[in-house]
Image 1 (tube, rainbow, N blue to C red):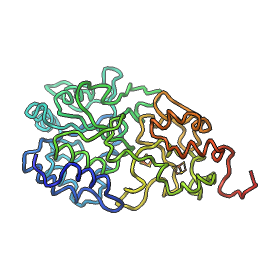
Image 2 (cartoon, rainbow, N blue to C red; image 1 turned 135 degrees about the vertical axis):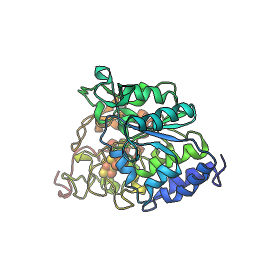
Image 3 (spheres, rainbow, N blue to C red; image 1 turned 45 degrees about the vertical axis):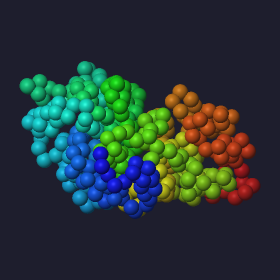
Image 4 (cartoon, helix red, strand yellow; image 1 turned 30 degrees about the vertical axis):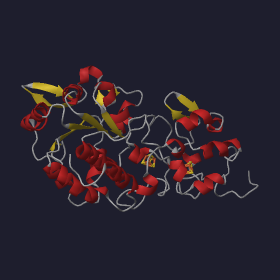
Length: 354
Ligand code: SF4
Ligand code: SF4
């Protein structure tokens, strides 16, 4: 597919675009070019979630995001912004498109997939007088897609809806649709740039970007929050806040930055206004498969450094070998090993108070 931007330059543009520079205006001309060259359509489905991922995308600072979605990238169906609704809209916007562009279109899924009670916890429409469950819709449409883009931690990993006791039997999309390539763009919600950039990549290059072992595009998710955190100096000097919004490292009030992969430290949110830790809140590691399986505003006694691998913060230094493999900053382990993260010192305590 012709484009003036090489893939390498595209990755650089996405990975390097920083605070206050929304990627939508940068990518809109490229998307227009791709659309004119016949880029395949996109279908967006919503399951068990809060619609926050769509809201995040629509919150991008680009004033015409809706126009970009519907007119430029040929988004044929979106439950919130498509003008049409009802059975006819589903037939025209989903089923016909999936058949006509079989193996070529891209499916975006937002929300987890409820499988309990044969999927009846999530009815999304009707066809030929019969209810359609979300699980059946995702299976049918997903199996025809060129690739599935899971936007948000719910569709990528199960997220909040799949958290125990999980009465609706929610699962991630990759657990439901097998043998179809997928890209996970997690976050609760994901940053709009992560979604726009991922859609742009598949439409411009008709290919999947480089992914990490949890299916995330490395152009957005390779960095660890803890490694670039502006409060890192506090951590290195063992100064820990004991309340939200206090100065100090937020580890004791629940920060999971040491295991969180995303580029919020440089990209910032809401048009470059702020981001989680800068606003005084701990990072919840909302982009990780383990989210939200931990106490929110408390120090995690067992840090889930990877699925199936946990360690107390004091042990993280000991499991450095495994930790390095999953991207834990070596500096973190070093600080634990030297005892900086052991006995607690709070931001209002002076040296010698401990
Ligand atoms: S634990 Fe959290 S607040 Fe502390 S330095 Fe790491 S990322 Fe920043
Ligand atoms: S900084 Fe942490 S809480 Fe904020 S978006 Fe990234 S992973 Fe999620």
